[in-house]
Image 1 (cartoon, rainbow, N blue to C red):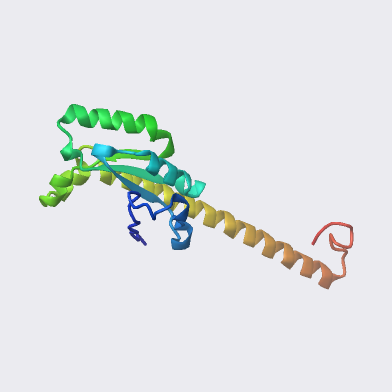
Image 2 (cartoon, helix red, strand yellow):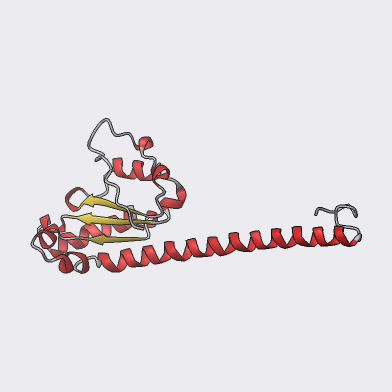
Length: 170
């Protein structure tokens, strides 16, 4: 299931970074949007640092309104600065053109400068694989516990000493 949460902008003085509690929403990954003309301000960095570590490792930084920049060179500068300032904090960083998106060219907006669709697919695939691995690990632990309990009952029923009787745990 994909759920979108739109949180208040950090320009609002009432929005404290510590007030962002995404754990209440069961969030598995974060797409953080920043405006290209003022990309990755200190307030965003502070707010990001207050998110749970597991979410910070599953973040995609999207720099919107890249079309407001003067030219491709400026977009490259923004991307370079974002990679330097925020790159280690996110799985990926992409630039998105708002003009293309509003003009109905969703494909151009998503697959253009930053290839948002590919970055989002990679992030969601990774989350899915991590959740599947965690489910398999949990299932194995449950099976081991059930097997151990079953063997303990079988041994007790047979009258043979169990690990507890021998000083171990059952």
